[in-house]
Image 1 (cartoon, rainbow, N blue to C red):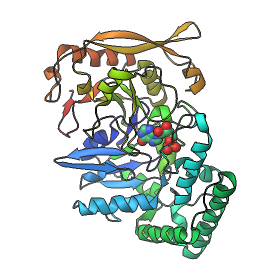
Image 2: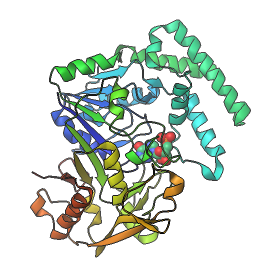
Image 3: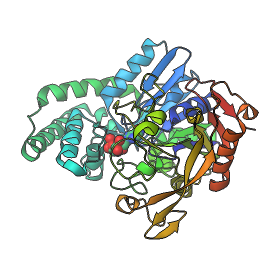
Image 4: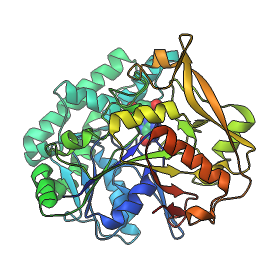
Length: 432
Ligand code: IMP
């Protein structure tokens, strides 16, 4: 009963799309269980670059089925665009291949407008959300007034609920945030039109996934964003609004707790973050530009969803250890090791100075205010000059690069089983 989970071990953008694409080769189902179109995956196959926000990148393998779990917030309009783009690229996207949970919450254009208005209203304390309506959609879910995908099966009642949603949101936008009113009639009709197209894809998916697991199929769960953006354990309040960690898979797909074969923690060889919030090892100036890249390559550090330049810094092993505690990883997958070529020395954060004391692991749950007081303590590891793009075996890596990886393994106490050294599918070192 193989159930595997891929989890971002940092603040998102670790390259999970690549990892999912790789593991999907051996999976029957690839299931997303949290977040929405705030996620963004760039996968390069041959000379084609695919950017996906809602559908798992696992769908690029023709034998897989993609799942949109009930833990997700789904923007039907983004989903339809993605389905069309994939079809134009020659892929089959059918109700057999793509399942949407009837309990997935829906994101409307009103949620997007509210997201931007609410974040802007926070002024200097703003989170820097992706503006995709994620927070407001999860707020509606928790407030028990959200719209769920399965509701559209009763068309008349759904129309009324959608109309009421837009009217309420309009009132908030105008009265609370002093924004222009929406043309609700047009938006309601467009929204209902999109949902009508998704009707054949909507099911109660929990039992279907359980039956697949019981039948020996391999399920790959794809956690979106990263551990440090988790609404409970992340750097609160600078987090997203969903459960981004491994445990979310059960509630987010509607299946009971059961054994998991692999929990793969994905980490870059350095640290990045988009949006506001504490970042103890953050770098600025030339070194930041070196790690970020110029933006000319889709692999450079600019957001897939927002295009924003990402904040960058040295690898933080205190936070990686914290991510391991929360997720119980079975292994690590390191991405972008190639970017570190050309440095004389590579600092790695091994502890924090906090409250005058040395702290090797976090003794608080993410709290952004406390993390802002943590000063990184670095250990300098030797760098290497050789480019790594052509390395395909462990022994092809320069000795210093192998030492860098071994240092991570020893500090965290986990094997690093895969290392990516470029954006191409093939730019990968698989360790025995
Ligand atoms: P939201 O998820 O749009 O509400 O944004 C909340 C925070 O999570 C912001 O700091 C975003 O930049 C960050 N965030 C959300 N999704 C991603 C992602 O896929 N990668 C990296 N950061 C993300």
